Amino acid sequence: MKDHHAIIKATRSFVAENVKDEVTGHDMAHLERVWKIAKNIAYEEKADIFVVELGALLHDIADHKFYGGDHTVGPKMAAAFLVAEGVDDGIIAHVCDIIENMSFSKSIDGVTLSLEGKIVADADRLDALGAIGIARAFAYGGFKKRKLYDPSLPPIKKLTMKTYARQESHTINHFYEKLLILKDRMYTKTAKKIAEKRHKFVQEYLDEFLSEWNGTR
Ligand code: ADP
Ligand code: NI
Image (cartoon, rainbow, N blue to C red; front, side, top):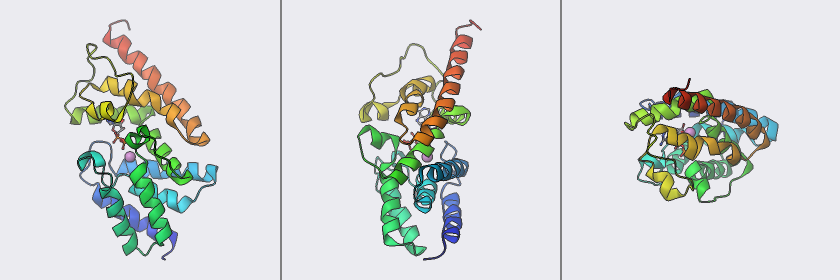
């Protein structure tokens, strides 16, 4: 196997090429942010840093939402790349397991993840929170031609895979249906701490948004 540094470098080039036309929040900047924060969490949590780095960089390689709900396309593409890079079989299997099972939608179905998988999932979720998370939500909503807000459509209280996939709603509902519940879905202690701060910011933003909407501020 080549040295880790060379493999990470090749992986960054590979995913950058793969997401170059992406504008809905799964772009290279997202992968770089998830990679960096996942690395930091991995140090704190004493996890296998190399597996976490590969999982973070490759986690969005083929989003199931764009492949008719198929969760296996991403792991297959990642495995083909990692085999060509000469990565050990055990590491490839672990990384593919992470990519296949780390998504928020899978967690609703109750999958179990390794420590490294939990860290990649946490890092990805952290990027949906805070200032960047808010920007990504509105960018995604705009891409889907959704309204910013519509008070006549209240958020769905109980989230299941079916209702999560429905999402024919406005972007503010996404805050209630996903962003504000992320804090309690963090796996690691390190991510929980970061999430608390970002959660508070999202909440303050929502208060401000609704006050301005209602003309009370
Ligand atoms: P996951 O891979 O965990 O399923 P998504 O692909 O759903 O995550 O989310 C990617 C980004 O797009 C996140 O920042 C998320 O908040 C945002 N997003 C996803 N669905 C919506 C939606 N219905 N409205 C607004 N933003 C959304
Ligand atoms: Ni992601």
